[in-house]
Length: 129
Image (cartoon, rainbow, N blue to C red; front, side):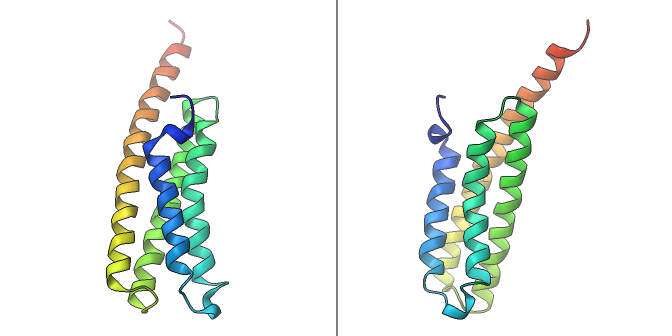
């Protein structure tokens, strides 16, 4: 893979960020510095941390950034559910977003397992015989 842009999970995370911006644009203006901003930051963080991790030298460093991305994804999931519960998101829109979040989570978890196995191999190569 020549770029993080080739990662399906990064592409999915970008789609999720765009969807988050679209959905939160309909939130009331008094939420602009509240949940709107929090959701947008969390969504942007997912894709950004996948990309940043890709640029790191070791698998352990990459894994750390993927953990951060996963944490941001959980944050966005919670904020999406809260937005639906308090009536900021329509039920159909929240279900669609939650499915995108779960899909991104599956891809991220899969990538994390792969990177973790790479990290184990790196560790084995550096152990004395």
